[in-house]
Length: 141
Length: 426
Picture 1: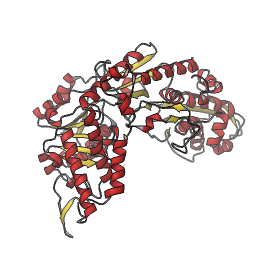
Picture 2: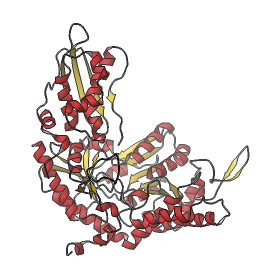
Picture 3: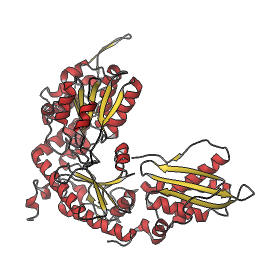
Picture 4: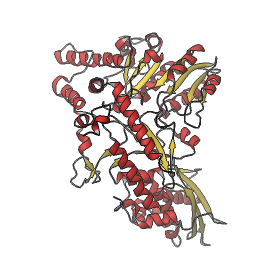
């Protein structure tokens, strides 16, 4: 026992214990919050865009929750700078599991994709495409 | 073998009735039960969510489908008569099991506890509640009761009140006295908390409700499976439970109601089977309990529930309770050895057969995933008690819950699994 904990490889645990870009940006272009009601995971993503209004320059996150949700948010803050809002919009679940580098069990997928969903919804609100106060992943409990 | 002798039930022979307990887990989940790559022995500690089903119950259901499958009540033909008698007698069996002396007329089959709750909330609550009335609940109610009465209260203008819990997760009975007053029309309380394991003084609460002319609905989802229950000794007006937590199938539960109350109540669902005479203008209702069972009922499930009751009665509910309490106390004591574990609810020697806790620094869902990799099936989340978790200051918790086939060794495997989580998250 104790070895082969597939979902909890070193990279995930490292990002969970030492989250990158954790905190708030001084002047984010937009920021948005989301939660998994059944897990209690909450994540706020702050995004700062370059002068072109399209390229992501800096990202920070804050929040609480399980290792999968927080590590995923931490990795996303490193992944997003340099990409554009339309590239963000195209990110799907496979991109997230690839980024995490582990197989996520079906029941935990919503933990893994919360940060991406929050960033995407934040961008859509920024573009005036949708109006929501908070992102909520489906509660299946 | 000498370990077995210390249990109030014969765990070894009981386990032989549940082939699922022999299986291994961990392989591809898209092909249930068929995987050669399942390698980890199952340790099933999620019985408060659902229990397993012994061969005797599976056989009773299979016998029905193989031998006398037919619709009930209406048919004159042989199969229908056999099915009708078995299905109707299942109601008598349930009534006997929970001490309802009125027999089948006091027991309506429902889908589960939640549907039983909704039946009373809609059939009685919507018609009887109004502004100035109150419904008294507890802070430890399952969403089945909490959400149902909360929403009925909103629709009728009644007030939903919540009896506080104290630091040990017991009801503050002084607060109950304050809340249950002349405005109170219904007290809806959980018998055993599915999160805290607290066993509530439902008989005292029934007295308090009746003193002000209110009714009491007791949610027995965690109590009927785990201890002897006598609805008349409690003096409950309504009592409900689910079959799948007590060796029975899913899709079947029961609503007990005092006969005169069920008589007065309007139906909840309309349709076939629940009517006596229908014209284009109006309809009259079938006798109890059929008035509350519209459409083709869960026939196989009702027969399966009766078989489950037969199975539990053979073991003896006193023995089931003793086994539950033994494992709950053992688990509580083992978990209580560690400073980094917070246990919710009353002490180990005063609770139902479940223990909810959190391991410091490890989210309940992470813990559940790590335990799962070692074959240990526990529940992580809010257990359908979100307001209670808000009060506990925990977004989620991990719950181990026990049944007749669990052993102390399985509790030890849970405790060992926590060590793996500690190592990973250290």
